Image (tube, rainbow, N blue to C red; front, side, top):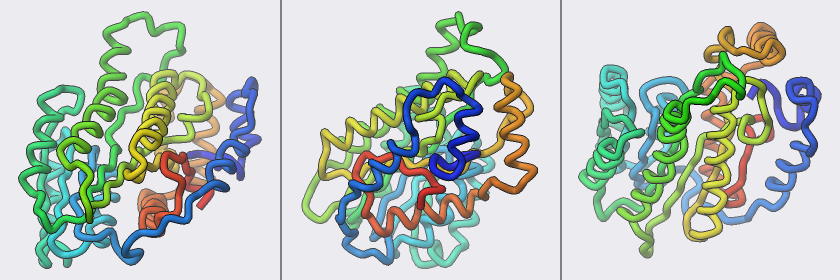
Length: 298
């Protein structure tokens, strides 16, 4: 995010002067009610099957690298993206790493998650690399697109365009999560974790970002519901620092200036720094299941 919900609320209000609720209070409430549940082994993620979508670049690629260093031998990573070349390069890198040499399996799935065939290929690959020795199934829902930020809400009259965006950014996340939970049901000795890569945009409206804000808000609520329904599943919506993609294409001048200022003033965390904080959350395992946690509040 360009600003922390606590650290820079004034900037957020500049971007959306009509905001009628306190974002800092909302996040503080989630954090103050965090559970004391501890991971069975706080030093690592166990012998895990980790499925990471959007793994070919950016935050997803970094998450794959970080997770590979925190799993026990015998673990498996299923990396999902639409870019086959980038995925295979990452697969080679991880196979040659210390974890890869210790026996970690890395499986690539080149798929469009906006299509049912793509979801089915992910589940098929996950089942292929799963073994009875696996004690932790972790799904990282990272795949997402920004959408067209060069236009305002009033211009989105094409239902097919909106449906296509929501299919990739909302529907696929729900259907993949449900499919993973069905494929790997609750059993003694198996932990299950679902991570939703969220955004400040799930809570805060950004002018000209209607598709992105809508998708992120829907996903946050989706995973809150999951946490209520499945108390044995650890669910986290984590908001890393906002990547300054397409900042020059943003229609709203205030948002564009904010993004540019944040970049020029060095206020943007790297993927590595953001991802390190996510790993800290997963290892400590103290968050309230279903909570939205911002990178700047860790």
